[in-house]
Length: 313
Ligand SMILES: NC(=O)c1ccc[n+]([C@@H]2O[C@H](COP(=O)([O-])OP(=O)(O)OC[C@H]3O[C@@H](n4cnc5c(N)ncnc54)[C@H](OP(=O)(O)O)[C@@H]3O)[C@@H](O)[C@H]2O)c1
Picture 1 (cartoon, rainbow, N blue to C red):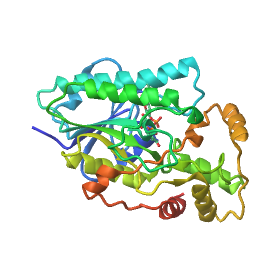
Picture 2 (spheres, helix red, strand yellow):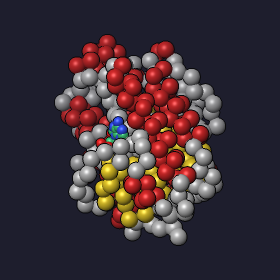
Picture 3 (cartoon, rainbow, N blue to C red):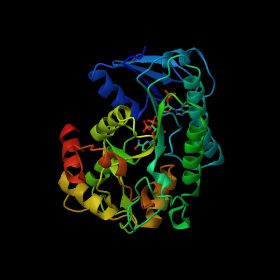
Picture 4 (spheres, rainbow, N blue to C red):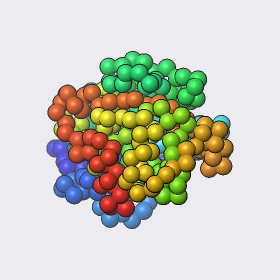
């Protein structure tokens, strides 16, 4: 028998919180798999280690969907240790989720596994939809490691033998929302301090999605069983960084914004223990399959997305 249970593996972070609220409000039972037990408002917390099968796997029986979000944050310096953790946390968690699904008597209806829109090639040219096979890294984007991680992540998903479960790779762009791990509060703060100018030369495209549309899109994917394989989870209108920062200044009522050149960003990234690739890679990605299947975005344009997020801040 199938249930209204939604499993959020690695669901204790930014996106997991958004999804837990979304699915709980719509009458689902939400279970969060985390490496540490914690009391939660809208969900039940179950401990796993993201590597080995355990009693947690019993939660998968007849679930409506398993959504795997586990992964060490990429917002850090890419030291050898961090690289290993970033890669292994994604590949191991994907493998063990696949093993747990394969052992179910009643398979979960859907398995949505996090991936990333960073998989597509750095480009200023035509946008990538899911038909694009152009996934090489580019030296100017310094994205070789991220692309390698994304490919290994999706390979682990593809290799899992779960024939009775509708399986999807979520090629998600930057999600704009209110969580501690979201870019929105960071850029809003910088803009209010007068630092909301373009970053680098400002030509690089930014693909993004509002947190509400992120949750709605995942529910859409669960319900549309024809959506198997990769699905781009992003708004239909990516825009150049300079334009995005102009909209931030407008939303925050900031009369000016100092630009940050590439070398200033390198220095800032070093001090803040992060990487410039997260800002300077040109990600021009569009949601081909969501649009083809009739998904309607509540926030297709960044202007309205920022206005709404600002009202709620
Ligand atoms: N946020 C975005 O804009 C965005 C965009 C594209 C893709 N994604 C991907 O979507 C996923 C979720 O994003 P998020 O923003 O919600 O991330 P997040 O806030 O960092 O949450 C990720 C969760 O993964 C778990 N985790 C961390 N290190 C782990 C490890 N070594 N082994 C197993 N689990 C580990 C943590 O849960 P516990 O500590 O409770 O175990 C954490 O709460 C990530 O894989 C991310 O790469 C995010």
